[in-house]
Image (cartoon, rainbow, N blue to C red):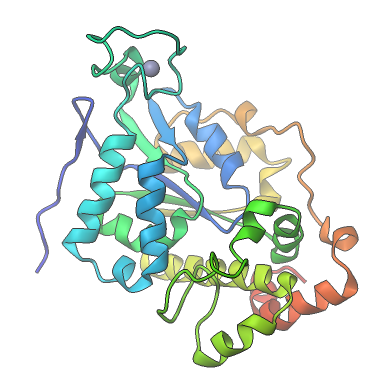
Length: 292
Ligand SMILES: [Zn+2]
């Protein structure tokens, strides 16, 4: 039975069409989030501890994220209601410094300016279908990047690699496990013997398979897919697309990055053995997405 839509109110504002940015690790979510967060009136968070708790609870239990349970929707709504609450103490835009006891719990001036809300926390992708249950009018921007470059970037990032350490790497018993890209009993049995490059490529594969499912489930009014490689050099077109899709005044200037985008960096950063390991697990997805 379809529940009536639940309207969340934050800082006295009804949350309408919240914007969520999704993608595999190192796929450019931060680039898109940076530009969206600077659009006037849109408050876009990332990495709030309460949100991360909810996100990883759902990453551990993929069935919970998929089952459209009201408890899961409440978990996410509560986490975001708190994350989007802007007071002088929690607001990243407020200058910091001493705050009076009277002002501390009150919405700050940025709270009054925020009419739209969103989030771009890492690994939000694994909560996508639960987010849709929690916010039926949510809009999603997903970013896709060459899995070879993603693997190369993950191999150079301790936070990405920490997930593969024994102990931390046991996200859960359920299959499939999109977070690690493990779908079958056989894949789970083989997993401990895989190289780190293969494990990174599997995480990418799990993410892009999830992205493809979202593409199949959501219409163009609710899901926009961007390619990381197109973000660079096509800032004006990308900003225009983001404006049309989200309704937020995204500036092309905010999409311009100082650091090089690292497109094709895998050619110098992956050994031929690592590249072979990536292809062994993700060749079909690389081909499907045109990364050949
Ligand atoms: Zn503020």
